[in-house]
Length: 524
View 1 (spheres, rainbow, N blue to C red):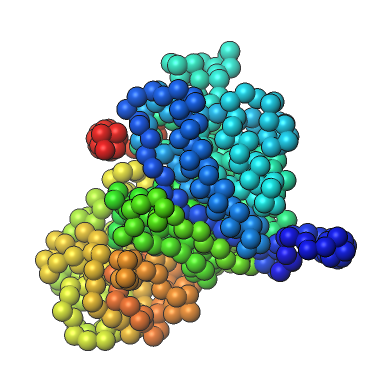
View 2: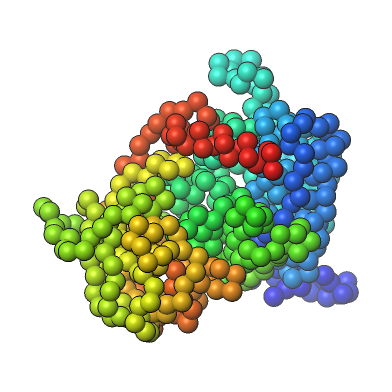
């Protein structure tokens, strides 16, 4: 790896002449994500711009330390979390002093560190740009964008401007390369959804990257647009992700997306375990390269974590070069599901389940057009309840999207009704597991969640394999199993709703939950 700091002029000239001053090779690059634990500001009142800056500079000081540490490890690109600078839970009015006008990098080239006075009130952009420039690395961060309405805008918000949840990208010279307005908002009444609905990508010397934020990960735009139309092979992902087992724990789902799409995925999460915000990672097509999950740390000084890993430079993803991701084994007519099938609510979805009663065996369960098959062997006789589940339908809790899921999971108690409640504890070891399903689309993601010291762990990439809609762990795992799942998205069957809450994917019931959640976050 070429060092960034040159100890002599001669050494610098030699490196520049031979390969150039950079931290990557022709085959690999070095990536970092930082899980940040911001302290909440006062979101119940509208502060001055100076007060907002005083707060944001505290977070930017932490970013500075993390960036300098990453520079010392020859990192090429670092990603920071969603809401890491401004925090979340604001109202539309209270967030306003935290926003900055961010110009369109497609319309003009701007290096805030070199030309800081081009726009007023851009102190955050100046700081991020200088961090990138002074440390010779790419920076991806999340902040708020203030955009005045054009005179002919017929849908301008009532207060005369737009407020966007925005990711910004700076190259290693500090130039603003890309900005992305979040398309799919999640309980974010302080922001407007992207008006352009544009999926954003950017080129680096070490590959093509797409950028999106948190809830975006579940929807065709921007995810599939980036994979199929722009053929990105890497994703940078600022997020404020709340763990929601059995399928949406941060490290579980983000690593599954990387494996399913065959991409590098850099996920930087906020750290606030009190409200289930935790779990960051650097993921490759083969699984987790590095991840951080710690639900026992709540303090800012203790909770932040820098992850650094070397990744292969990828030029394609699993969709762009037509590699088979799945093999749909469709069937006609009604298939008998057998005795013992029962139903259990699983994050709002009515799954069909069948218990795994023997320590070794085969099982099969169907729901609508999906049939799931499993083979398994446990190390000992079951003292905890495990079940094979299937769901094929429209998910409507906290968002509306069509899914197909096959899962082997631990039920929370010995009651069947608990099977979908997302257990966080397990003492059951499996020595062999295999799972497959009759999925309709190639967008299937392999999820494995194990019980570890800090509740959740991922399986080493050498212990399992995924191919064409089926997953296998021939020798099982050295830790107890929580869930072993195939989660598939059927974008063509998504129900398109309209809503006055800034997100067409939210149901009226969800909007009510959203208001309660927002009120709780403000009061807390």
